[in-house]
Image: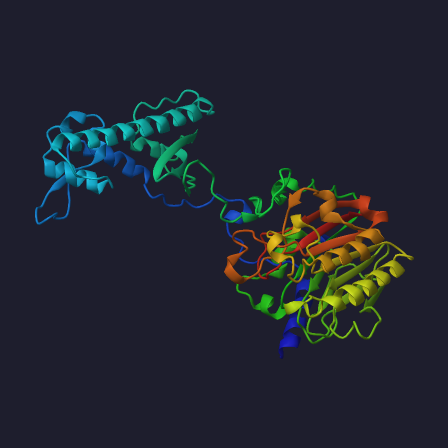
Amino acid sequence: MNHIQALQFGFKTFLKVVPWNLRPGLVISLRLSASSMGSKRTISSSSKPISAMDEDKTESKRFKPVVKENGVESVSVGLASFKNNPETIEKMTVQELRTTLRSNGLPAKGLKSELVSALKSLVEKMNGESSQAEEEEDQVQNVSTVSEVRKSKRTSKQSRLEVNTVQVDSKAVTTKKKLSVESVEVSETICVKVDSKVELSTPRNEPWTILAHKKPQKDWIPYNPRTMRPPILSRDTKCVKLLSWNVNGLRALLKLDGFSALELAQREDFDILCLQETKLQAIILITSKLGYSGAAIISRIKPLSVKYGLGIEDHDSEGRLVTAEFDSFYLVCGYVPNSGDGLKRLSYRTTEWDVSLSNYLKELEKSKPVILTGDLNCAHQEIDIYNPAGNKRSAGFTIEERESFEKNFLSKGFVDTFRKQHPGVVGYTYWGFRHGLRKTNKGWRLDYFLVSESIADQVHDSYIVPDVHGSDHCPIGLVLKL
């Protein structure tokens, strides 16, 4: 069995296995981590664990050994030991004073009286910062839901509470979150080092929930599908659910360890799946096209007709377009040409391809509404790209491409459904593989569902699925009421 036969067998088996009454489609389950599925994050280590905070209190009368200095072996006193016994500073030798000051990064020259004064000042400063931290903690406790818990001593009993730990200027500040009666484990710890203020760390498995943009506007907010998607439609509401994904090579995706089309189908429960950049040289299932790029539509709803390409020979040699006709709309799955390195194909893209595609869509629209989806290779506005200033001459964000997108599609009556639903939301669908940009959410929004204006109000949901990996793009979805 060759690769193509294996691929065909895999899809056919998937379609046979999935019960038809479940309305599934293709699903891609990559190893979704527990945290991305809503479970608690694992405990991260702090530079100073909670137990270490108690150890300082046992140091009040103990000297810490230090390396030899000028051939003389000496010891220094931990600063924590002076908090309640500052008079011990007077009893220290000159050598001990100098060693202690040096170990804390301070000058150690001068008479004994000067050294004593310097060390006392350091201890007083440390006590002042500690008091401020304790005051901030008490303020958090006052608004806590735990009203009858009183903390008399900061001891290891803190391990009986769920805590958030934030590192500020290398000092640990522990705030009480809520009482856990039956558990004695710290359930959630978030650690981040900052210079001057307390900040929450970026969620490890949900980086898209943090606003990542070099020129953010004051009213922009990050995309969070957990809170921004509308309620699921009732079962008696007639609708169709579509998913679109640039898979960046279907063979590679199917071989990916942990990938499961069935799991993604069960999770997203879609009716139609559109794929781009399949990179296949054979016809797969009912809709696909020869070419190095490749586009495909996989549907559990039988289309009335299927067409490949634009009907223009100069555009149709790369397998970039598939059209499926359904009862109430045309679905066009497209992979728009990239302008390429050095913008070599910029002119072709903006003056030939975009114009021809626009005319093709308007011709289809004479019969019924049109849905265009896929990788359209254009970040339309500055909100659609992390670094707009640095990419003005990059393929996908040139003035020419953005103006062409506006002129040939939006101005012709096609609606960007995601932007219509989320006008001030920063949400990306593509992150370059280099430098781990997906982990920091430094991306582009290149994938779209554009619909005819006549059905724009029928869109119930237009969304991004940012937690699905396996490609440099993530899937996008559309729920359309019929």
